[in-house]
Length: 201
Image (cartoon, rainbow, N blue to C red):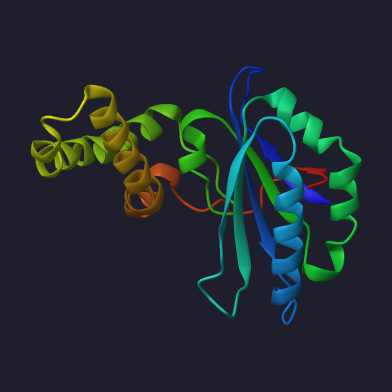
């Protein structure tokens, strides 16, 4: 069982799932094997667009953060309702300290997963932080890489520029920006945990 929260998602939108797992001490290696297995199984389903696992930075608090993405809500539901997924989930309980927290996001929300006990920021804040982050990156890529690609075909220049921007946004810029603006984005921590619908992972 997991706690799940939903942002509005349309049938056509790509959907990103964010799952937080708190692992029992000494069960990290077993969880790694379990995570590898369920991710490999999910990748075989139509519409799966990949996943990324963020491992614990604090050994005293072994929490894993897993992102995975499907092309559409229908593709995600095909995986969620599968017997394969149910079989993998049946192995999870001995490895975790409490039910995982699972969220669905589409669009900008994937960058702005709130800390436990806090709600997602309004869309205008998400858009503003994203703009303030991506604009300097565009200028940086154009200044540093642009001159070297002047004689390249336009499709190749666009591909390289997009690849650099996506990589920088994903692994460096957006994690930094969301930490930097956390107080403005999320406000104060809620005084009590948010009541969330209980569902399977």
